[in-house]
Length: 265
Image 1 (cartoon, rainbow, N blue to C red):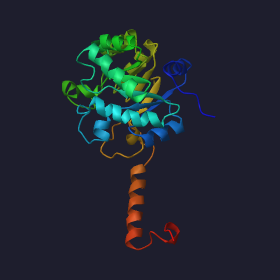
Image 2: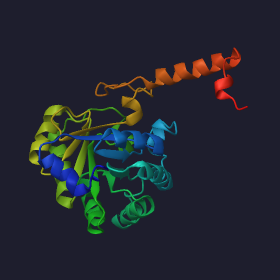
Image 3: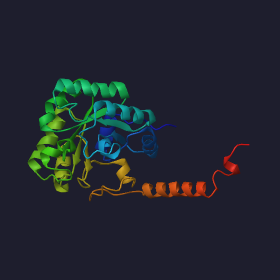
Image 4: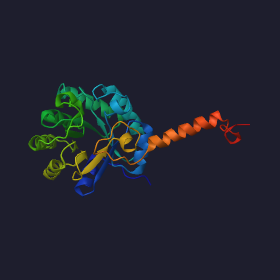
């Protein structure tokens, strides 16, 4: 029997009941299916694909069309998890009207459940406008990758407690159903979590958030050049894949593959 689909209300209800929420990023059909079958609560189609999939140094080059393309693949694989799609750089910052149009395209063209955008107080009007259009919004405060040039680089721990709480509260008041806290000092993240009604999803924000998110390829050991303190690698799939490729090369060169069992008569 297929597990019940996780909706935005169910996501919030699970958090209110005290269950820790889990979220991973996926960018294609195969990995989304694996994560969904394993039971993750939510899959984020992150604009981190700019770095993980496309090889860019930041998320800034990612376009709305690219996010839609990847989200379509993910949604086709998912039966249970809540699918959230990042709104890429300049798809929501120009105006609330533009943001509603961008968010509407994402849901309409992909079948995803919600969108995520970076910002708190500065984007409150935008969050409110998207929510008013019937589109669920997850906010994102703390270290914001799309503001990398403004904040002076990636990986900076955010410690301004007053500003962080104000951002998270503004997002909640504008209608966001959850908020990601990225690279926030854990004591501050704990205070924010206690202060909000909506779930907090931490990445590099300590154990006191309502849930946790990691980039899928990072936690699976598929990437090698990104090892921040908050990242725990739960598998070594890069090494396993490399070994499999080396074994294929050896067997072909030595005439072991294909053998009779892998050939047609």
